[in-house]
Image (cartoon, rainbow, N blue to C red; front, side, top):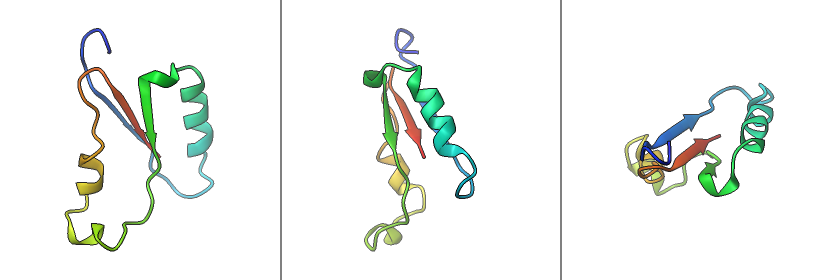
Length: 71
């Protein structure tokens, strides 16, 4: 992915206690910490509700050869 300059976006969605955290921990344990960014997703802040729903995520999309993981 890095050599081919392909951006990777991984999104975990689910209910609380569905095992997302365990799956992310298993995945990231095998990755180089310099090769990805983990973004926790929280409820939108007051200024964020005035933007489109995906606006918060667009700001953090990965560049060429980078990986972003959204929890």
